[in-house]
Image (cartoon, rainbow, N blue to C red; front, side, top):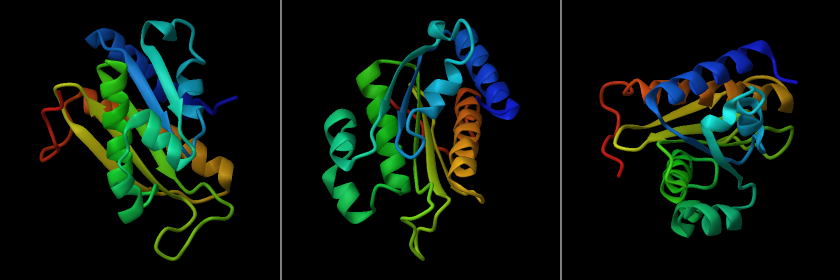
Amino acid sequence: MFPEPCLTAARRLLDACAGAGLKLATAESCTGGLVAACLTEHAGSSAVVDRGWVVYDNRAKIELLGVREETLARFGAVSERCARELAEGALERSGCGLALSVTGIAGPGGGTVEKPVGLVHLAAARRGGPLLHRRCLFPGDRRAVRLASVEAVLALGLEALAGGPAGSEAGLA
């Protein structure tokens, strides 16, 4: 179902979370649950994966994960601010130690000059640690963009567990 690089990234993240004694939550828009599905493709993943939200509609982002209406009005759902608020909301509402979020434009339609098809914002929030963000522009069709997003957010989760790069935001409650 998933290409080997996605499965390998999922296994690494699951192992790292288990080693750190952390549970994980996901907040997904353009991937529609693929991050959670890739993680749970592995036997024993229930020791780490706690829950996931698929929040495709803006109303769901607001109601379920606390994304601010002002954020959506000012920056849009496909933005760094929204990705960060999704991860923070998932971390807060789940009580997990790590939360991953994905929001973007998988295509084939929906892109603009400012926000083209393939633009994806990822975030990883670690309780007591960094909140990391990546802006990515993935090539290819809808499937390629979504699978590249899965692999990239899993890698970002590993980075957050390792403490993140210098200059990242820290101190999430």
